[in-house]
Length: 569
Image (cartoon, rainbow, N blue to C red):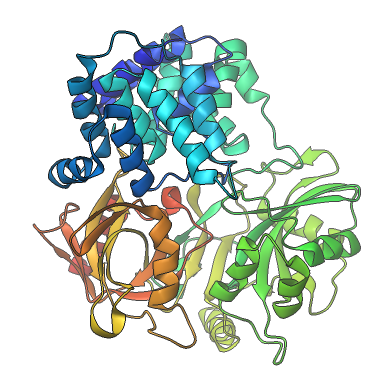
């Protein structure tokens, strides 16, 4: 398959604003794609090289992009930067300069989708001495063989900024349309539901597309939870108050909402695999948890869920999540960091047990199985603190106790509810003292002055457009971040954000949306200044959300909902 077919699809998608038209365009390409290439093409349509369960990143910075464009087109770096400062898009820059060069080009090698994918995939695995030079050659090879239009989308893909407005829901519906073209009405809704459920359990729309093409609806229905493979976990929603949450359900359980990291623990014999809510495999980072699962879980094959909590070695009290996140990201000296930051595991659900998937079993039945399954290791591995009550006074006492124990708040759960992977269906409601925090991406910044010289002093926050997947400005953050001492500092955040800078102009930088922050604020206001149409008034930093990626951040619909709620109060 020629890459030009994909480039033409990108071009048409970029010119199309209507969601249904985008679905038609993508579906037409997917149904014409061979099964072997289908997983690759499905991912690349969104500008992704890896599936959503992968944590691999291409890692091409703006500086290297300038070098690639310069040497591929023959124009000096300063001209590339000058043009970028006007256009704000390296894709448009390479397209423009490649057109000027093309007049002198006699021959170009035909570029295939497979070749583009293979070169881009290799970028993620190049490390160490000379890595930047190797990455340069891999991308340059593609750009040199590409037409101007193809070069535009190759560069955009390497920067993670494809700009065609295709979110995951559009891919889901495109797969449904491509391989079930005759489905309409309720039948189509059923197809879409099965495509999405397949993705929740096999988090790769590329693989889901292949199964839909080859095996149809029957194949999608056969996709099951598999031990050792991550899945999208059931997600919670916020409740305005404890009283409101208690009133939602007939049979209620209240649990501590721990300030830790969600973990899915897969056990098959002596083989234990651990995944975060973002589906990162963190088995190597937590050998102590692996040992605890072997010791405490009385089953040969199961998948249980819980929360890992970092503990202060001196006081044995819970640590802030930011400190625990050091262990999640650590690749070396695992034993040292494990000794420095011991963990405690609180389990609250079981979704697979001895060959049986428990999604269609009510929580009260799953919890009974969990209690008989787990032999607690006091202070190390135990059931989450739980209270079964509808009494508001008892619930408030339990809530106060959770806060006094340095936890975030409580979870209010419907004990009659089934488990729906990947969904926020209102079965679990979280109640926290600060109800209106938002998880937002950093999408830009300005360099600081004075004491903050060398650091990014003001951060531009972005919420996700649920239709396109793009990020829209909604506020400027400079409060709550430490200059030095305990807590997250400007220096630390700057170091995290620097690799994701896509461009600089004067004192300002544009940043790819990779780092997510939890933000509190006084209120949400309408704003003509920001691209979202809204602005956070007095936003302040609460904590880093290293357990969340861009796709997990809050979207524009959430901002609008909160805006309406505050107006009604």
